Length: 170
Image 1 (cartoon, rainbow, N blue to C red):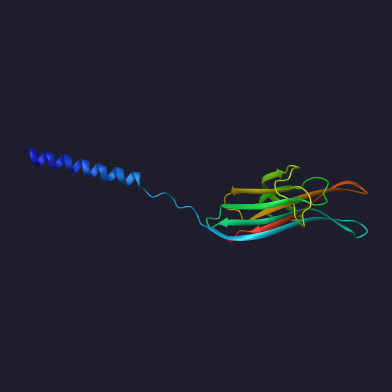
Image 2: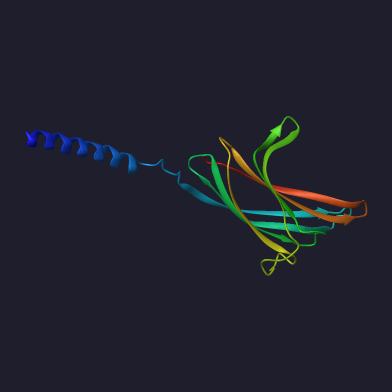
């Protein structure tokens, strides 16, 4: 009689261990893979009424999308050129025209410090900062980076912007 009872207990313990180990090593959802890296450059330039130009700020870097379609990450080096202050950077998604109005959903806005973290090199000759980030937004169609530069003109203080829109391939 001891043998059948021992077999039942051993069998029950073995079955319980198998279930428990299945729970402990259950597969986790796979993270989407990162796709191609897209290089980008943004230049903010003031054009005077007489035709002269003044470079205010610049951003160079990359953006990369995950193949799940909901996440992107980026790194941009933003520098001050002849702008009055260090350029600001905005990160947005779903940018485009709605009638005659440009619209987007803003995710982040960076007001960069006036101190350099990188020694400037041409075409930068002022404060330089690197902005790196990752954002998740359900079902976005594109990502937009907007660079803002400023200067004083004959009309007073002026802020100008230039953008880059990268379409998600997923």
